[in-house]
Amino acid sequence: MTEAAARGRKNEKVGVVVSDKMQKTIVVEVSRRVPHPLYKRIITVRKKFYAHDENNEARVGDVVRILESRPLSRLKRWRLAEILRRGTQVAVEPEELEPEGPPAKGRAGQR
Image 1 (cartoon, rainbow, N blue to C red):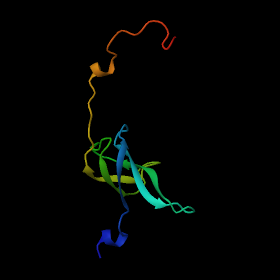
Image 2 (image 1 turned 45 degrees about the vertical axis):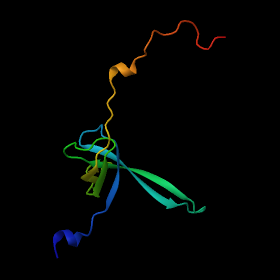
Image 3 (image 1 turned 135 degrees about the vertical axis):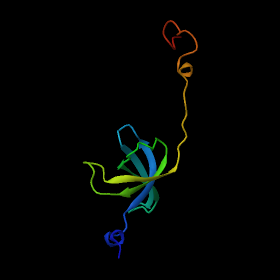
Image 4 (image 1 turned 180 degrees about the vertical axis):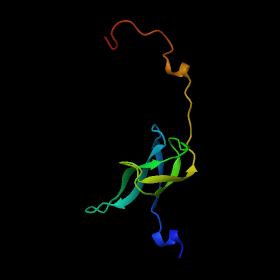
């Protein structure tokens, strides 16, 4: 029996990166669809996991697979296994953010 097989399989989850603002850490949101315990209607349950990203490869919007690991910090118990799909990056030009004309004088909406 190999050492990896003796320890058993690691738990893995697939989710979307919602934050990459920390160094070597990403926040992954995993969604599950489960029936409500009382009403039996299918609801979406979301949970956030902090995962270790050694090379800062993942970006917001990427779909990633994370693997369970030993505790790396107070919140991090997962590590990035692979990036399954890259998210779309939308660039906004500074000219698009500014208003086109001078601001209106007086009160807005005065009749």
